[in-house]
Image 1 (cartoon, rainbow over the protein chains, first blue to last red):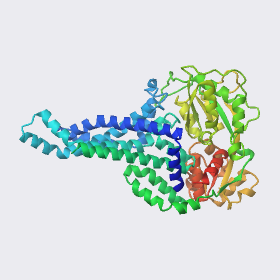
Image 2: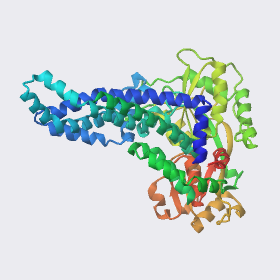
Image 3: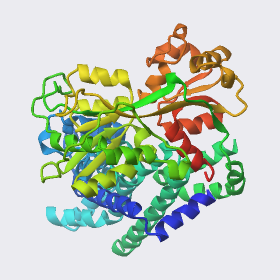
Length: 228
Length: 333
């Protein structure tokens, strides 16, 4: 483990070009997939939590089930759809970062929806009652609700980011772990482990956790400031 | 046991971030640092049997036929699969040129004191002009086996080709079975693999074609040897066996632990051909259901299987290139 730590520091200090590329691809993929998932999932989740209509529970159960979709199944599905013989072959997306982002969005969005729904449904009643007491219209009620959601929004984003950065099943399937193109931290760790080079694998793992720590610190600071 | 523990820790480190327990995993791992570093100084798995005629490992190049009978997941024919045939042809021409052959034959001498690949006698040679990249042909998708990629051979060869002719080669590496499947799905322009029976099936299925200037679809050009490795004290006595077939029989007789790749790779295909026929071991899980007390089907890459063999003091069939890389890395693991 010491050797690994040493190697991790060495890799960062020497500015290893391949590592730089892997970090860049990882950052592009994670930021894109986590933000897109949040943009799609948060409004749907808030609406689902606050709305009242028959069949609402069915949607909730569906999204909660999709939360448990194994990444590798999602990857396999995307692989078959976008493969050279698949129905979407003309888009030529297999083994690109774009398809990795699409696969992750499919994987992460239900997580965001279910998470926001849980939070919002627990306070929707109170907010509605407050709004009624203050004689608020629809839009003002919505604004009040949105204001209450700032704090969980950040935690949900962190959840989405963590899932994205730690996920390997789907991205290795649709990305192919091609060097200089679609190799991200997790697939690189897997490659090195398969080669029997555990030191380098753990070194990358240490770097990955360090980055995750930085992102978490940054988002948590933002969360505390904005939700005050 | 210490090794196993520290590897588990390594796994915990990676998965730790999912559950958010990374910090505690790190501090727990730190405490095993000293003891693990000491015990990991040397690899105890050694080469026991090599350079046997049954263990020749031949690597072949096959271009994917653009008019192959591609079918989608439901078995319906697909006719408009896009392949970069010109790029695949250029890369194959280059692999069979004198420049690439010399580089391949010399690869490994500096680092390991021995060539990892040898030139096949009578291999096809390309002497013509290699077409440089154009806008439409610049990206070549090469599907290959882990042994070629993990040994570092492609890392040493491809940059030369890329800078000379302007192509970008995208390498995906998986076991031969998966590498061939990728080509059948139209996701590769050419394959570089090492399992004769699976290659012939690929050719017979119409998935490859004869390139201009060559005589066969299968262009075999490099070879090396599979090696039978195991614990240095060799309880099954395979070192004294006359041939590798006897050695495999001795392992099965004494029920000594054996790690099989079990992933349809070229190495796995070769291993299946070496067991005594009476055992009936094939790639079907039922065929070795009665042997699970000594036969482990790992379904993992070569490196991961070597680590497993090292942990369990088991015998294993591996390509020499990956074993030498493993041994070299093992020193500081």
